[in-house]
Amino acid sequence: MDFSFKEKSVIVSLVVTLLIFGWYFYRVFFNLALTANEALSVSDLIGIITLIVILEIVIHAFVAIREKSPVENERDKLIELVSCRNGYWTLCVGIWFLFIHLIIEGSATWFNLYHNLIFMSPSYLAHLLLLFFVLAEVVFFVTQIYYYRKGTQVV
Amino acid sequence: MSQQTLATKVNVTRQTIIAIEKDKYSPSLEVAFKISNIFGEPLENVFNYE
Image 1: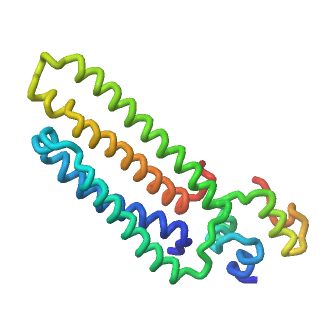
Image 2 (image 1 turned 30 degrees about the horizontal axis):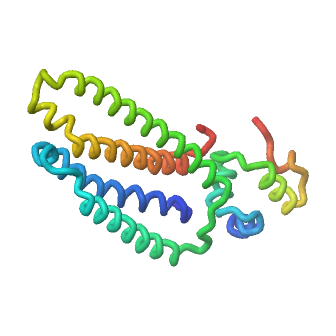
Image 3 (image 1 turned 90 degrees about the horizontal axis):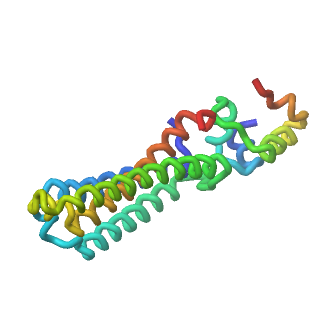
């Protein structure tokens, strides 16, 4: 298959995001008790973002060296815009889900104290918000790859 | 003329030229006119709408 520089760049970003945030969320959501008791570690988050930035720079530099014409043209911009719309809708759904979750869980504090201790903790909610943000990013990358392969006539 | 040569002249990527050929992408009027100018043909001889 023939990939443009931009398409390779999107694939790299998708793989890096899935690997690093996949590992992070696996660690967070499969250890709920830990999440409830620990605040969202800022140092963890900074570490992850730094790792992503370093990996993206190194891999992109490697891809760009091998590429003859790393230019972005109108097709790339169109695909990016349409995919950005898809990512936006994913983020909207996530925000609404979180909003409804807050209202429902918040109004039942008397119901189950332990349950609310976990699912209403600031750390858990912050992680949930981060999860939806990352999901929106993943949708943004995946739909870009889809439009590169299937064409923009389906837009 | 190779796809790469045409792409360089139009200032797009080779993958965009391939996408136009395979009917996976409709170019902007600017790019369409550039392509038809390069081939020295009227626009309707190079592109057609089905």
